[in-house]
Length: 148
Image 1 (cartoon, one colour):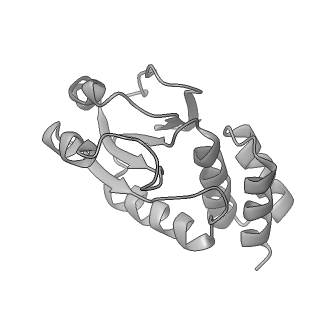
Image 2 (cartoon, rainbow, N blue to C red):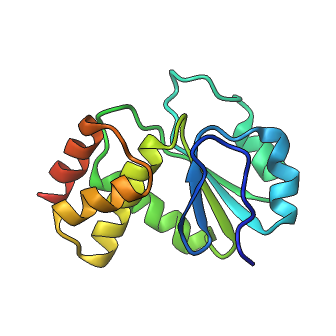
């Protein structure tokens, strides 16, 4: 089932059944689960405002939940490996990856795709931009992570 469009900032389909964007309204979780969403990945850092019970609410709606706290400049390959592992384990339905604006979503998605598909660092940065990354600092993080 194609992922249903969600009402969130900078919503975009990243690939197949994986979508991304800004902060999700947790009141959407039951409808998301009914529409085939099986996983929510939150990239917001502990210092940012998001519902503290977001994970519990996602799970209560029948979805898996993973919190990968990312700041503005700490993106590394290990984060992409965490994402790959949870997508392998629980990505059989539609998947939402969110942060505050979609910027970190794009960066992590670009890094994930580049590592998965063997892309160059420039291709990884372009994939990240195509997925919603706008920050030059994050572009530098993606480039650096792929240059190691």
